Image (cartoon, rainbow, N blue to C red; front, top):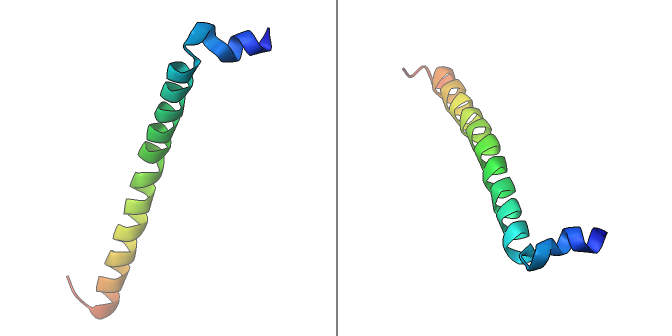
Length: 53
């Protein structure tokens, strides 16, 4: 029964690949803005420390 679930009626490769790609893209969409925010805040702090606008 469990092996039937993982085999997906012969389409397992396509199904699991699409799940994996969807997960990767969702993680990227979640992580990338946080990294960008951190980089922008670091840049702003650096500019303020130097007295730039």
